[in-house]
Image (cartoon, rainbow, N blue to C red; front, side, top):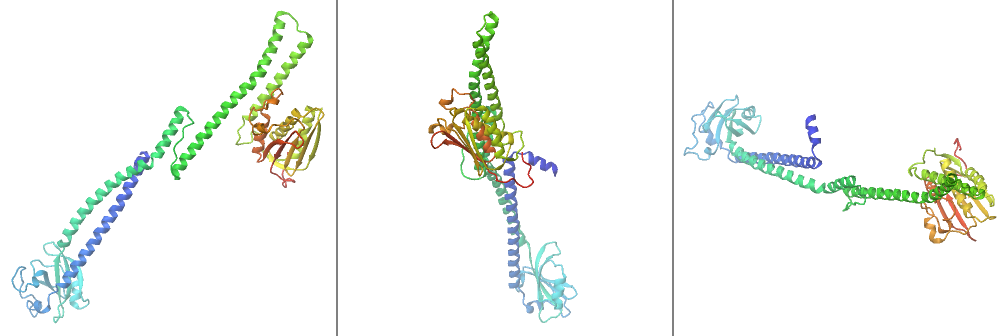
Length: 475
C-alpha cells in the first residue's frame, strides 16, 4: 500500500488529477451499471412471477392425473397434444411431507420448506428459485390444490429466460462502462491540462525569473478564481521585487553621487598637503588651517552620510536592533532640544511640551526628532526663533526660514533629495527620509508644510496616551 502511495505521489500533478477523475468517474459508472443490472433483474423476475400467476393450472385438470393416494397417475411429457394450457410450464405436485411428482415436464424440481408450507395450508402461495434434477435453475410458484388437502401445485419456468437477458445486459453495461472509463480518462487528462495551464504559465514565469532575473514579467490574469489570485499575487510580488531592486539601485547611485563630492574635495585637500610636504614648499599658515578645517568638515560629512546609509539599510519591517518599549515622547523631545541648542546657539528655542507616551524604539525616535530640529536649525535665520510644541500626541516644529516651495513638498521625504536652496548647505539629504521611516514604524505620520507668516512647520503625529500604561517601565 505504501509503495502504491509513493508511486502515486511521484506522478506529475496533471497525471494525478487525470487519474483521480478517471477513478471517480469509473466508480460512478460501475455503481450505476451494477444498480441498473439489479433493477432490470428485479423487473424481469417480477415479470416472470406475473407470468406464472397468469398461467396457473386449474385444479380439475391436475386432479385428472392424481391417484386417490396423491401419487401421480402418469407423467405428461411436454409437447403432447392434450391440455395445451398445461404444457406451457413445468408442473409438479407436492405433498405435505415433501413428496412430489411431475405431471408436466421432464425434470423434477427440488422441494423446499416454502412448498410444504403451502401444502400444509400454512401459506397461500410461495415464489422461490429451485434447481431441477438436471441442474437448471427454475422460477417456481407454489399454490394449494383446491379440493385435495395436503397437496400443492408447483408451477415452474426456467430462469434462463431471465439469465440470458441479464447476461446480454451485463455485456452491454460492461462495454458501456469501459467506454465511459476511457472517456473519463481522456476527459480527466483534458481537464487537467486545461485547468493547470495557468499553473504551467506561472511555473514558466517563475523559471524565467529565476533564470534571467527579469522582474518585469507579468502573467495575464483572467477571472477571479484561485489561479487568478495566485497569478495576481505573483505579479504583485515581482512588481514589489522590481521596485525594491530599482530603489536599491537608485540608493547605490545616489549614495555614489553624494560620496563623490566630499571624497573629491577631501582628496584634493590631502593632495595639496602631501605635495607641500614632498616639494618642501610650505603652505601659508592661514591656508593650511583652512585646508585642515576643510578636511575635518569633509570627514564629518562622510561619517554622517555613512551613518545615515546604515540607518536606511535597516529593514522596514522591523525596528532595527533596538527594543520597542513605552517611552515618554516629551522627554525625548526635551533631550533632542538640548542637542539642537548646541548646534544653533544663535537661535532662540521655545518649547511647550505636554506629557505623551508612545511605543517606539528610543534611539530611533530621538534621532528622528533631532533630524527635524536640525532641519529647522539649518534653515532658521540667525536670531530667529524655533517653536516646538507637543500636545495630544502632535509634535510641531516651526522655523522662520525661507520655507519650502509648494512644488518641492511632495519630494521632501525622498532619499537624497534636497531643494535647490539647500544644495550648498551641509547634509546628506537622508535626514527626513529617516524621520519618515521611523515615524511610520511607530504607527504615526509626518508632514511638512508652509507656516503662517513664513517658514516651515513639521508635524509628527504618534499614537499613544497622556499617561503611561500601569506597571510599564519607561525608557
